Image 1 (cartoon, helix red, strand yellow):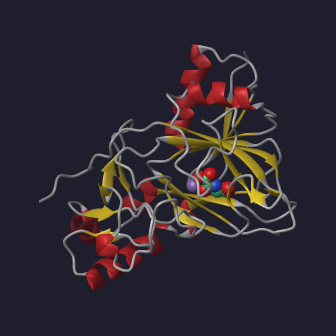
Image 2: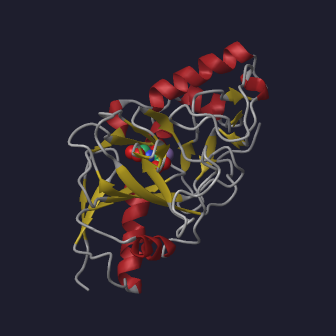
Amino acid sequence: MPRISVTKLAPALGAEVSGIDLHLPIDEETLSALKDAWASHLVLRFRGQALTDPQLLAFSRLLGPLDPPGPNPYGKPFLEDFPEINVISNVKVGGAPIGNLGDGEAVWHCDMTYVEAPPRAALLHALEIPSSGGDTFWSNMYTAFETLPDAMKKRIAGLRAIHDATYNSAGVMRKGMSEVTDPRKAPGAQHPLVIKHPDTGRAALYLGRRRNSYVLGLELEESEALLDELWAHASRPEFTFRQVWQQHDLILWDNRCTLHRRDAFDPAARRVMHRTQIKGTPVAPAFEAA
Ligand code: OGA
Ligand code: MN
């Protein structure tokens, strides 16, 4: 297999990997080069990979055991034959959505941080894309942490926050949930605000999602103000990479040290993505509580 080449896509994060055909078996040396590129760039893009579902699953499994999709609002897998695959789509068949997230904006988030061991990675494969809109953005949470003022780094080092399970990133209530009126009582895992990345050992800001987040031990107002400040910082444009999709792009991202969001798009257009995710480990703090 020819050597892969890796080209940066944005100063903050993201790289294009070429010289690889993901339909073919991948040797150990190439896999290890891919993992190194992934650790350095956090988001990898592979263009022109028209993968079948079994091929998407086979490639995903090289990165670790799959983590099945979280419960969708409809209570059963979108693909009966491939329950490990999630569908992200606005398309409806007979009035019923074939996937999650619709056509609206998906706000900044990290996937499934409302559980104790959120997925380590996700892969999104573009099968059909609108002619414009629906761009996806990732933000680098190592850089976000490193560029905080020292006083803020110290302030948040030992703090933990609730990661609300109630709503998905499109604002849709998850199955079995009810409305949250007080973020202090939101259901969901509690994680450190600054985590230690299990592979690289680096500190990363770990925010999850803004809605119904709450920093434990603070007055609600104080928590809201702190979170607003951290979110404004974490979503600064210079920390981000913007993905303008082409059909058959495959994107792999690290779900521990990045956030992502998606633009809205024309409801009359079709956008169909097949998605897998890789099991993670419980989240560990970068610093012990004082
Ligand atoms: C996801 C997600 C955004 C998109 O798959 O986790 O947030 O661009 N997708 O569809
Ligand atoms: Mn997501």
